Amino acid sequence: MTILGIDPGLNTSGYGLIRVKGPYLQFLAAGTISTFKAENFSAKLGILYRSCCGILDDYHPDAYAIEETYSNVNPRTSLKLGHARGVLMLAAHERNCPVYEYPAAIVKKSLTGRGGASKEQVRYMVLKMLKMQDFEGKMDVSDALAVAITHYHHLRYHLLKQ
Image (cartoon, rainbow, N blue to C red; front, side, top):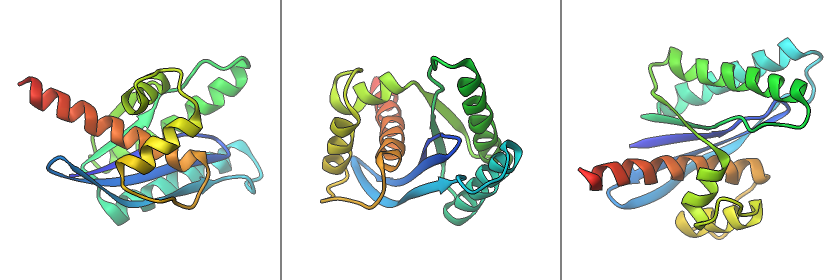
């Protein structure tokens, strides 16, 4: 099974792909989608959508896990992030890839045992769980991989529960 994790953002969205083989996790790919150079909001949404479609077409994941929107101090920022999440989720839906959403606190707790963990603690656990020394990219990449790992943990929990 292949899981694509997404850390949505309007200017930078992280993505990370893992492969599940029994109880083992394998890193496949990761990176960011950057929209900094886009001239307007709708152009940024278009870049996010097309880039995500390309990733989905290249890797054909079995599941798509995305971080939920958190409440921002600025409602306008939250609304724009919601639009970004919407086009990212639409790309998966149009490719018949099931979409799963996880709040940031659940992602942090799933990896570190604490819902208030720092981004550095999450990155450290991602590296340990994927048996990696390091990887290129910002925290957006480790956050996206953390979302994918969280989905794996939830799948495994439900299988064990049955």
